[in-house]
Image 1 (spheres, protein in one colour):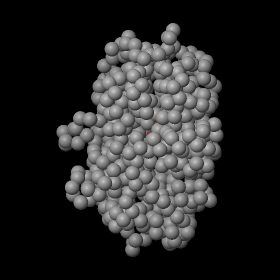
Image 2: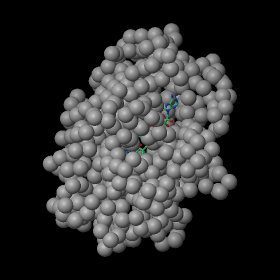
Image 3: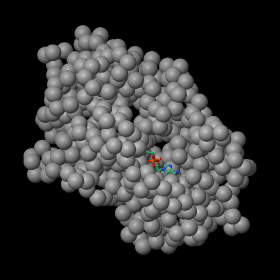
Image 4: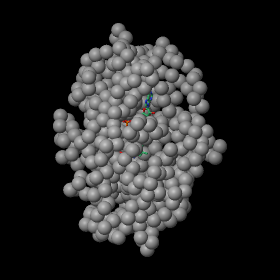
Length: 496
Ligand code: FDA
């Protein structure tokens, strides 16, 4: 209720937030988690909590009239996107002039919608991105802890080599090999044991039933099943879904937040003011940065560092589509969970082979390339519109496209194949106008100290992807989790 005081408030419920909530709860600190999305626990009329990619409905997207899937269609047919009812759906695409940013909405944040790829960065790369973080400690303690807590597992190779559902990945490996490129299998939080049972008909289909992006009904160990369930289990943590934090101010002893509670149809239920001693921002790169920028620009927290909003990047994300030869089909059965990446050590690219689970043979190979791009964007706050803006231009993505194209040009040359222009809309083979991996805005050791404590504001913390300076070289959630574990351990030992 409004006016309530709690020892700790956590804003958001993605990776950084979930780690903080669990460790606070275990330490006996009364904690309230405020999440703008819904709790994905109750099934719809079809008996399922989430809808699949081929049959999207109101559950798919956050208050949209039409779905906005990254893949627009195949063969210029509008297969993927369709009209939907406006509702508190699980996937959002936050649109800025030069970039659309996909994020999860709900208790569990990005873990509800993502591909589950759980990748620890190479140590050399980590040291370059986080020069002030003790890498020995990260690689001996925090990465292993994150992998255990997230229940990361690897696909059994004999099954990978034999199953129809990864023919598309093995084909991409063969084609890359002809061009001289190696590949690697990537770990995941989706249970491969479950996936194998799906294939045998012993478990309900999720990855093998075109589910990802709008949620997985089975198989995936998302945060709501792990960290957040454990946090609630401590008896000290409460999660309030459908509560969006809009404002942060200071009180004599801590912080006050304003939260707007809505229904799943978007109607306002209440506006609440709550106070706390310790405030943890885990609303993601966009959400946490927005709260800080607004607080600085409106004078609520006027002394926040100048660097708030700086250092943003899409982790060099570029998607690309190739066309395969007729005698080398990808297979119409495709697991929705990606497991293989082509590695290009010279251009510093990993091109993850993404599924096209259309249920028909499309001859398309789809890639999510993660590239190292030195360009950074910055967030600004528009007071008139009370809106976060992102200063990022398409031209800034050029090094990423060049790197991905360099690799895939060679794959095409070695195989006598071409690109596909019917997948992303606009007749393009490379999509550089959206990303899955927004990073930065409240960078570690710039906006915060070395453990996520915001400079100038005691007991105000950033816990999430906003801490990562724009580019990591691999999928980010294991790093966000490990860093959050490290930071909260330090804070609990020293500040609480
Ligand atoms: P995260 O974004 O997870 O959570 C933030 C939460 O805060 C959200 O639930 C949001 O609703 C909430 N929130 C925001 N503002 C708020 C406010 N004002 N008040 C209350 N709540 C608020 N990564 C990876 O490592 N492997 C992968 O395979 C993939 N695949 C992938 C696919 C897709 C489709 C997407 C969109 C993303 C991925 N990712 C990924 C990226 C990964 O999911 C992402 O990096 C993390 O979820 C980021 O974790 P954070 O803790 O930063 O926030």
